[in-house]
Length: 339
Image 1: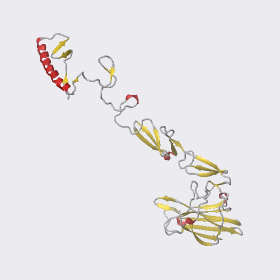
Image 2: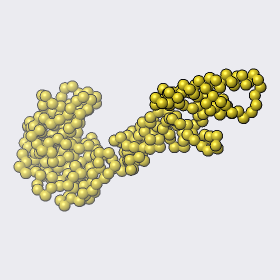
Image 3: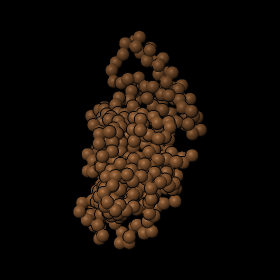
Image 4: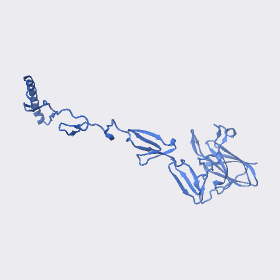
């Protein structure tokens, strides 16, 4: 509750009397007198209000507009309780809450998020063949891959591995050598004990029951950049003289899809001795029904001539999802023919 007292400009009101700084005409005096009378009643009304705890607000004129306004005494003053909102650099007034700090950049995985005047602007670094480097958290940027993401290879006796983002390459010294097929160090223990001898005819094996020790060396349609990560089923065969051999491997599982691959080595656990590798067969040459596109990924075939010696056949596969199809381990069939 408050009663408002509004003195006339240039006059000081005290009780029911007024002292003016200039003389007034009779008409003006009557106006002033009537005004003073009204003011006197207002003052009298204000006394009990003050006694009851209410305050009397004196109007000192309009408040200055904006920060740094000059008052009557030549100084500066703020605009009282006026809330001008949060401020940005340079004194500009922000019209609302910002969703990011202008001028900053951060990483969301490998997506660079730059803040443009309070609005996040995302850029995916991966299509640019790069990764997002946070660089302290607020000064991030897209940088080129330092290596092919997920790639493994050998550099002499060292295994070279690139992380999944292409941002870091590590090198591990291999005491027993590096397997170029997998880009991993060879173990000290033999990896081919108890190998089954292969004879002409057909055999069925479950790759889910086998461990994964090897992968192929890229050659022909056995492409670089992939790893045969299914279980390895290994056979050996011996030729007494130079002969032509035919090895046909195919998916033989009634419930699963198996993307097969087959390769031959002259030494079981030495990928550098790989002699032949085949991944897919043309749909026109496939023995399996339902071949879409130009190649059948569920069948692999090697036809080659080898000199006398002992050889190792490795049945392998790829594990992945594509176009709603899951390729996994399972039963396969190998047909072996010596001509």
